[in-house]
Image (cartoon, rainbow, N blue to C red):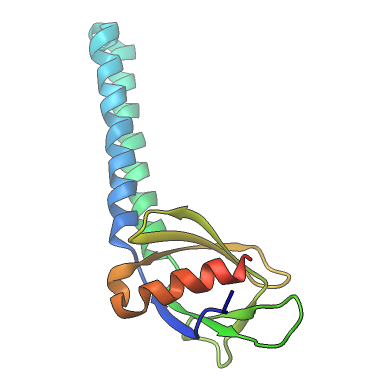
Length: 156
């Protein structure tokens, strides 16, 4: 098998992630409202009012947390460089977020969720914790296939 070509791929805020977070919050709110209607809990005076207020406040906290999570999602550049001739090593991944002078070497890049036009990746720097990034085909359609080949090649 031939190694994947060099790839430089931009990573930014993912609109799919924002829509997913909003949908999950909406689904939770709908489930809470369905519980209120089905259980007739809302007509039980103070406890019904308390539950409605708690439901609304919980939904607002979810929306704020989802917005903060989306705004803090990592942005940068993911790079794959093949290393021909090295035994056992197909290549190396690096991450550059624009604030560091040098790109950080990554010990691992894992596909967690593959939706064909979007990928959820878990990237790890040596000695650091995992960082989760969403990558979309729309960011650089011409290099999408190269990125996917590099991910397969690096996990071989």
